Image 1 (cartoon, rainbow, N blue to C red):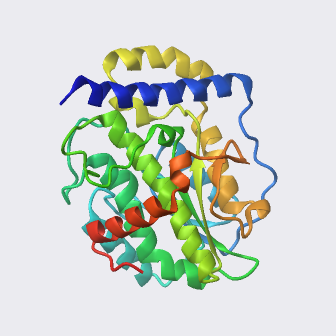
Image 2: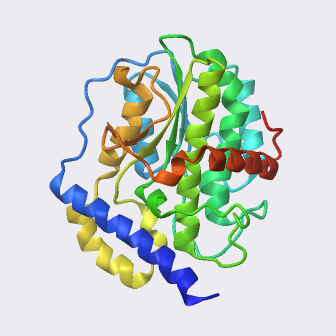
Length: 302
């Protein structure tokens, strides 16, 4: 492994982090508007037992939504078999599905593989949610209706700006970098968001999908950072990082705000529609990634 293959992704990712921190120094966190009641609507939130996922689930429940935290109805998002089992259990309950928040994730994990042999960031952050979304898509379509769409929210990150999707080596077997792998997984979520919205629009489905960037939030996601970096991060995080509730606000907005009704294919940051990385709009790359992802998780391409 060459030093360049490690240092370049590291530099690009931390540069993204510095830009986000500078923004957060000079801009207040997004304040949610008054949101309409969500009585009768059903949501699934992955990674909902702590951090941003917990705050998202808590706020949606406070609006009257029936929220299923994926860990409480057990699912191991590092296992495609477990994802399929979870979907079967959910379907057996006979509930509709109006909101799916794909939030579970990990960051900066040393090189390791999921149960299915995927690079860990790719498998957990992206492929498991790709499969979950596709397995629940027909239910989301049936539950949505004109003027009251079902909504999918993919939790991405500003690190996607540093991401490179290597279609020849998605699993990063040739040259591994935890920084590069994480950034790739978050870029993959944005590419997935845009391609799926194109499909939904083309088939006139009452389902929207958006990508959300929560900003830099003080959560356990940073536990895998190098010890020295963690020590430096702690005093900075207390002053400049968003709280989990603040980090969840844009996801809650995407899931419940009247202003987001029928609005899809957006990258949302601090409550605003924002331009994502230029490469994320590459329709050819979107299609290639979709096709490859279907192959990897064992889905027939639509």
